Image 1 (cartoon, helix red, strand yellow):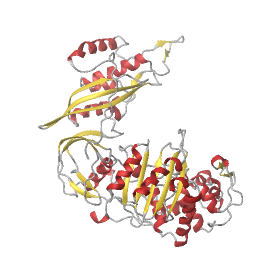
Image 2 (cartoon, helix red, strand yellow):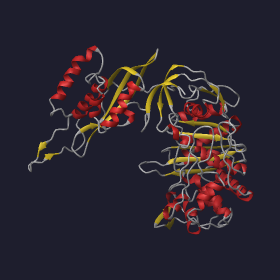
Image 3 (tube, helix red, strand yellow):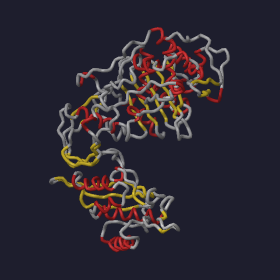
Image 4 (tube, helix red, strand yellow):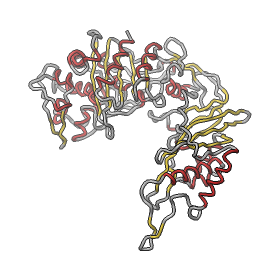
Length: 562
């Protein structure tokens, strides 16, 4: 682990805002505290109420005013800095939890000399800058970071309070987490690529989250010795080994370095550099490249390196899911590559009317044509012939997905294809409904098609710790695998994937996808493909059509692989 990347820019200071800390600010603080004392009988700003005509209190409504936001934020930050955790907690909507968290900064995190400087509020949100010193035994180091708080009006009584969240204390804290300084539970690790060269998080930003995961799993096994650190300790650490989606502990500050052990990964430095280059210029993009014949993960990158969406994301995969659905239809003899297959403008199932993009239709077309054009109704129309668990079984038994048994070397989400019914079952056939995947899962799908068998992806060789990799319950049939390769190849030369796959030769295939997400203007763009002994998948959240957004990312990765 270790502190990674640059601290985000500090919020612009408002020269008229309260500055908490420092001799020059004493008069300002005094004036502020005096102002609070004039508002009600010891209550925070915004908590007073006037009498209504019937004699009952008239509860204030609506968002807090700018004056109320400043008063409550300044009161909270002043009390917090002065070490009066009870008073500070009283300014929040969860006093008990806030008091415990704030007190833990001195008790568990060993922070001293805390100073808090608020910035200019944006509506009800108030950014602030934290400076402190971490002192543990004879070691000490300065600490500085930015955080923010949000002020809200409580509906029950109209009081204006800080909306308490763990991220107020530190932006990396989530529910149940806390900061702790002491000897690290796990020795540090040095992650190296497949050739034995160190993977530097400064050169490869996405490696930071990878190293955190490697350290938690292999720190004690890799031969290192622990140092002293300030770190985020995640909630319920005893259950993290059972939760594949759990975030690993995170180091925020190293007071004394331990001796790292070495963990060799399967990453290729050239391909990792290409992956980092592809995501850095895009917002919320993630990509994974694997080797179909073995399952080795050759590259992984995320635009946001703070969370490994490529491995742990849980997103609807849209039409890339049609690869799995097509395999099921082929296995059940419900269709064939060149068999006539319906692609109407609309198809209703479970009282839900489904349609295609731009409401197109294909008259007298084949299944190959429908797959290449990504016709939704061609798949939805088969729902009446399927059992509710048909897709779930196909994903689990043939593609090894949704079993929560992958062991890649770091935490990963293995996909989910829950049993659904009616319209939700039909939606699952086109990668919506309850289906959830990430780029690792969808790269594995293409790899399974290319290799003709499921090989569980892995980042650390199973030989390193003698672990057992997941296996599919039954192999994909040779006939179905061959037909899927034909369908994906046709999509790459005559369908929705033509542009990203142009000029990549004859040994390749692809599938595009876009997934609607509630509250998003644009859908998430997906793309999965194989070329030779390489398979890749990418998602660009809010990217629109997969061929336009995620397709170029995958193309570059397949080209980088030679």
